[in-house]
Length: 248
Ligand code: PXP
Image (cartoon, rainbow, N blue to C red; front, top):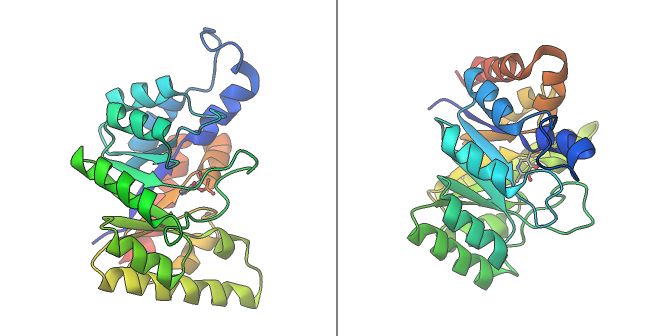
């Protein structure tokens, strides 16, 4: 099966909010996350990912509903495990949700969701989503206990946090690859889909070739940054080409 690419367009909204957060209805508000989503799809994105955070620092609820209405590929909503986000997800009806930890101080999602200690509330949230026909992914660190618990809780997918891999230098790179590989193998053996995300870019994505059983990458920052030079469609096309070359 070919490796899929989910494109996270949050940072298009980050740029818009930097200027227009206090002018939500301004006709000048740009850039547009919906247009970026459509351009990403034209470049080959297999799904679009958005994260409506509790602090609304980038994506707004209305962005989510506009994107939901307009796109032709699955929508993946990243969400904190909160009553507010559960309500949004149930109204939005994305194909997938990815449950993430969320604290106000972090710059972006900084660690995986601890599904071992938060087992009960994560399990409740999974059941609510699945009852509504929404598939659930859990964004977890590449730690065996986390993967096993995700499978026990009945999640369809895990997304392994590749942030440490992305930041690793020298011999730590191999260590991170082997942590990811062990976690991916456990997920695969437990029969759940294993995805990867956070900090994946045009250079390090080649190294992930050494991690078997990955189905999908979720990539935001590097693609949005590349889009500043070549446009979103081309930035996504370039990433897809890199992924296709080593997925064969
Ligand atoms: N996956 C999850 C769960 C995330 O929270 C993020 C960051 O928003 C990403 C993937 C994408 O990470 P990056 O922007 O570093 O590509």
